[in-house]
Length: 579
Image (cartoon, rainbow, N blue to C red; front, side, top):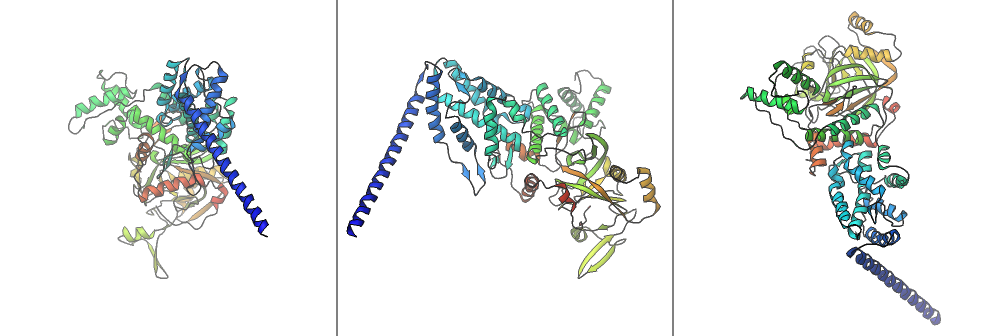
């Protein structure tokens, strides 16, 4: 037994010593590799041929990749670009991907040029360190035929990092979340982007990145307009100031003339052609979703003072909204509600079948109309209105004309159908967790206002009955707008029509969009969501975190994470009532 323990101790000792030896050998090898890489990086010389350059760069890159931080967190569901770069360099046996002894390979030149044009994709070029990479390339070019291996390493790794970051931003958006900031999270996408990276040998960078963009006609028109804007304009900052017309009316007009020239609505600000100026200002107002009255009001001044730099930032963050919400495809027919435009469109085969003005939710956390997607499945003629409890509690001063019902101690207030009903003569329903819908209204005057945010969350529609008739005609109902009007006017009685083929409906928030002719339109940021995105993406500032903002981001991210099938949205509980 003693002999057995003796042999066991000896064997364990040998194994332990062997482990220590191997550890020392590994440490020595690592130390030697670091020393070799450091020695190569410290020298600037002319490699005798491509093979020598490749060999030495591989040593430098392998050591650099070995020291990448392990930015992976399962608990935070986060992965940085380092993990993807580590993978592709390993697959490439640590050979340089973008550089050669003549500074940049053909693929490296292609990648650097592509970074110089990312503004055509609505991206902030500064996020990809283009200027720094270009300076490194220039420095290496000045040294050529000598090679600075440290700078070459920085250029190669920098271009790899930029490729992955551009791919992520085109695919998922630049705007990340309220905690981390710019989107740098490759969790769940490692294989997708490393597979794309492997295609660089046979495909161009531009072609690979383009496969990540949404493919639908609204987005395509918008991006075509964005690219045209960038190609035609200097997007550097050029502050524009319009004097207050209340204190200096002639000065305000003079400033407005110059601004209209800047925005390409007038040819020459010095020609005092009042008719040309008035026509140009009215057209500018209409293009910016303002009433074309020719008066220099507060909202017109804001639009006039928006220079090309600010315009580009708006175009960029709205392209980012498309990418974050990931609307890849659109059906052949749908209802599109862009909240800041204050318009609803019925679209069929990429043609606007009907367009009407709308009133959306007030600028408060509780009343703002949410971003959502669902499918319209019911039209209600002469609806009643179940008044929400918070409106009963905070806003109602009289119950005259309302039915009040006691339900186990709870007061339920209902406004019966009629000409004075808050929902008007028609209600358009679609399942959603926010209990919002579209409806008519007896109060028509707001449809002529510039800013139309006045409801409790639902969308009030101009000519709602015409919208309902179009939806029914697109379905199986043998009905026209005129015959629906006759049916409405025959008697005040609630009628419910269920669509056999529910029509997809999208509520979105875009403060810039291209119309169906390809022209760019800019809208007022009614819910004040642009500033945080601009500060985030262009100024490196994290947004103010408030309960309202968190809900907004959560709603938006929920759409990204949960793309439910449209059929599932048709299973709905009895809707609560808002207006």
